Amino acid sequence: MTVAGKPNVGKSTLLNRIVGQKLSIVSPKPQSTRDRVVGIRTDGDVQMVILDTPGLLTPAYELQRVMRATALRALRDADVIVYLADATAGTAEPLNVAAGLERPPRAPVITAYNKADRLSAEARAALAREPQATLVSARSGDGVDLLLARCAELVPESPFLYPEDDVSTQHLRFFAAELIRETTLEQLGDELPYSIACEIEEFREGRSPTYVRAVLFVERESQKRILIGAKGQRIRSIGQSSRKKLEALIGDDVYLDLWAKVLPNWRKSASALARFGYRPPEDSAT
Ligand code: GDP
Ligand code: MG
Image (cartoon, rainbow, N blue to C red; front, side, top):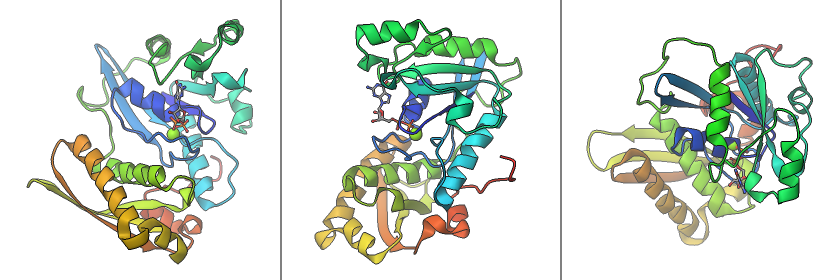
């Protein structure tokens, strides 16, 4: 099952809701999900593997190109696609138009309208008249079980791919980096949102506190100064909030060693993108 849709419609919130745990970073800023996040939910005899994707957008630079390729690959690999749209924006254009696909994807597509909690009664009734439309609120959870039941009917039968108590295929390191990046986006407000990458240099478990050394990369010296703040108070504050989130994630005390570094124009560099785990397009067909 792949959750796809435009930036900011609530895909990551929906994934977290379905899995019952915060896996994917949620941000009021679009484009905060860069890689695809895999969630797993096992319910009785049904196991769903859920991919959250970066928003589908027209790429302007290398990072966006990689993000779009990732989203398209997730669409191609899916058994069922949940096409999430913002209910407050009215009727959505079809997925293949929104995603700029030449033909509709192979898998069945369920269109779900999110943020139903923000609709007036009239707007809700109008959308409900659309055939096949499912109204959900990822934030409150309303309608999500119904959406999952519809997906479960469409996914093929096969043995479980993952152990029953797993919620994800990705490593703690990945989530640690994402949480630190999320905290940075929160604390910087509208300053330099897309220039930040986070790399975990060391993640040492086994002895408490867990030791984590992380580097926040920006593209220019001036950005580094903003990130560090006067007397280092900005990065200290990012570090404190991040540490609390990491402790909640791994259930242990954490010692977080957080650094800021400049990697000039990393968003345009294929090698830097690979280093941060953003996979390049596999082939030009995607
Ligand atoms: P993504 O870009 O599609 O992954 O979207 P996010 O999950 O990051 O959410 C974008 C914004 O929409 C965030 O500010 C969320 O809190 C908000 N949001 C997500 N789901 C809902 C919902 O069901 N209702 C409302 N009112 N807001 C939501
Ligand atoms: Mg997202």
